[in-house]
Structures are given as C-alpha cells and as structure tokens.
Amino acid sequence: MHTHELHWSILGAGAIGTLWASYAFKQGRSAALLLRDNARLEDYRRARGILATLGGSAELLPLPAQSCEEDGAPIDHLLLTTKAPDSLKALSRIDHRLSRGATVVLLQNGLGVREELLQRRPDLHCYQAVTTEGAYRPAPFQVVHAGRGQTLLGGGPNADVLANSLSVGPLDVSATEDIDAALWRKLAVNCAINPLTALYRCRNGELLDNPLALQQLHQVIDEILELGEYMGQPARFDGLREQVLAVVRGTALNRSSMLQDIENGRPSEIDYITGYLCRYASDVGLTLDTNQQLLEQVRALS
Ligand code: PAF
Image (tube, rainbow, N blue to C red; front, side):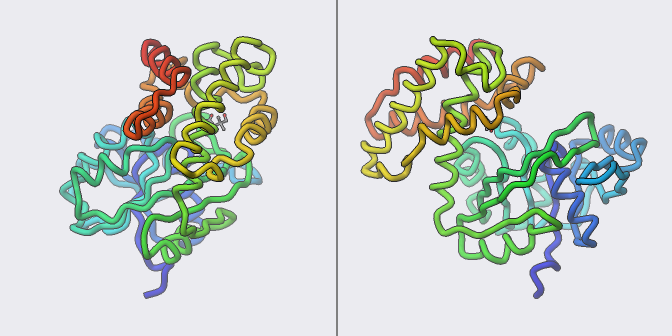
C-alpha cells in the first residue's frame, strides 16, 4: 500500500488539527475532521469549511467533516490533536468506531495521555509526535499557519510510514527512534515557561523582567537537571537552560498556551505538564519543591 493512501481521521479541531487537515485536503489526501457533536457539525456546515491562511491569503477549504455522534466507517488511523485534558473524553465519543488495533498518533502538548489511553484500550498502537509548527485559531473553523517548524514522530515500528503519510504540503514530519527525548525536552521547556506566565499573567518575555519569576524559572530548570542526573540520563537535558532562555526571547511577545487557557476559563494542561513531571519524579523517589509549588498554584487558578 502507498503510504499516502492511509485515511486519517483528525480529532480536535484546534489550530494544529485544522492545519494538518487543511494541507491534507489541498494535497488531495484522504482526511476528515471529527467534530464533537451534531450541533458543532451544523456550525461547521454554516461556515462552509475551514478558512485557512497558509502563507498567502485566506482561502475557504471545504474539508470533509463528520460528527462523533454519527455512525461511520471504522477508524484505523486517528490523529489526536485535542488538548491533553480533553483527550480521553474526546476519545470516548468515538470509542465504538476505533478498530481493534487502530493506530493513534498523539500530537499535543504535555505527557500522560498515552498511558491513560492504553489503560483503557490496550489494543491500540499509540504513537506520539512533537511539533514546532506555529499555528493559531483566530476564530472557530479558522486557522493561520504563522511559522514553519518541524515535527518528530515515534513510538513504534511504523513510525516511518506514518511520518511519511502525515507529511503534507510544507509540514515536514520525520520519524525518530527516540521520541521520548523530544517529548521530555518539550515538556521541560513548557514546565519552565507555562506555569509562571499563567501565575504572573505575563507574556513569555516579561518573565525576564520579573526578578522573582526569573528566580523561579531557574529553580524549575535546576530541578529538572537534577531529575536528569537522578535518572542517570544527564545528557537528556543538555543545554536546557540556554534553550529555555532562547525560547523565552524568541517568543517574548507570546501569551503562552497555559496563560490563554486560564484567561479564557478553560481547564489548563498543568496536570499533563508540571503534574506529569512531579509524578514521574516522585515515582523515582525525588521531590521537586518549586515545580510542586507551581503545580498547586496553577491548579488553584483553574
Ligand atoms: O505552550 C506554549 O505556549 C509554547 O509551547 C511555548 C514554547 C511556551 C511558547 O509560548
């Protein structure tokens, strides 16, 4: 079978999900958006598609879409782009359609969903991906591709085939043998930036102007480096401090995803970012005081 013949169902119509769906559509690949319910599908039909700004001007793309409430063909390949805290609930809506042994690719911030998913459906083949593509959703059913990035995918023997199939248009997906390294690095950067921007209600760059926040940022990094040593894998976080500071400067004007969630009254991803880190550390016998404190403070905000 040609890899481009895989049919993808895309669950999670946020910026990243609609970005992939839009490029797949433009390339004539087989992909469909799965929307939460019939009411959402009605809204989508009224919008007549996704308004996508992919580089040039905005264009209306009539991507195929279905509601999770409708019956449909069994799903063999699922790209899951929901936020981590929404994932299990979203998956439960299509549980009956997910084939035994279906392939699921998680493309989202945070860690911990894979374990939750496999606990519920041990038959699934669960891959993970990390992306630096920049995209945002100015309004429902709209997407802007704001910056080119790279995507790594791994977690099983078919990573090559899946990466190939998900490389659409300029979206460049590569298979990696060590997806854990990429996931942990992304997690570490998010642990350093996201909770502090949510607590101080500031843009990423403003962390550098706030002495207390900056001190906490360094403590978060110290604790992650200590965990790396403790795990016997100090190289895992090589250059983390420089990387975090480079991301803070490079995204100085951004409001982090966690700050946006808190400001918009949405559940934050804290339990899948700092929460995952603290649970992992505690399982190996280490307490990360600053991270634990940030976890509790952000939980109290949500
Ligand atoms: O979650 C986010 O907002 C982003 O991953 C990052 C890198 C912190 C930039 O805002």
